[in-house]
Length: 345
Ligand code: ASP
Ligand code: MG
Image (cartoon, rainbow, N blue to C red; front, side, top):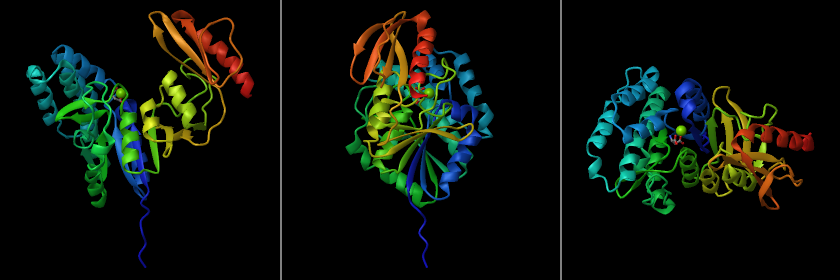
């Protein structure tokens, strides 16, 4: 009797703090899935790496480079990242050879994810680092590129080959390729990479792991009794992401085409918090983002009653947005959340 191994496909993305501080947990989490599905890992650069590289692209300083190396040292275990560092210094020496400043910057930034993928793959044991430069073709909008799905589809054979050899591909998030130049997909773009690869490989689910277990009714950094929302619909998650919810990049939700479930969890304790799919709970969500110097825009999704004490700048059926001064943000979030929480308790 031939027993077929289950061949469900799962894309697991780890954010910058997961790879930097909880690499062992991330590797273990991946291996658990690897036992009976085809797993593809997407990694962000180590937390702070992208910012360091941004500074390096601006201004050459040996200190930034030392900091960059230090960031990864703990997990190198004899693994060499010479090749990536050489490429970095080559790019910095020849910035003038790039078609524009943004193209040069994207090349420098790419080193963060490339090093992270190499480290992750080596810790997995059976991991193969894959530079998304070879997988994802994008438009020419350096710094905020979008993936050309049609052209990239054909490259998925690289991934299938790795699976056939019994290994796990570890793909660099955030990166792409435009006419042979490196592009990046916008800050926090690794979620988007996971969404696109999930779509192109017909994944059963996309799992986005970070240091926050899911989407909360309000930012848990400010609101201590914010509650995690176990089930969230694509529409509501997308609206929240566009209005300032940072846990998932809106482009990742769009890339899933409302077909692939997106699961959110925290790497450290392997706790799964939110599933984004066709089924969602009608729980209000409070999000915020910078509006203009000195002001935040606080939005409440799925709550009918108006807050008269704040200036409403947009009132729609699905959400309301208020203008809140910097120094009033904390209090505003807390008092609004109290009202909202009362409604769901
Ligand atoms: N490393 C990139 C950034 O910090 C992409 C990501 O983390 O998703 O923006
Ligand atoms: Mg990051």
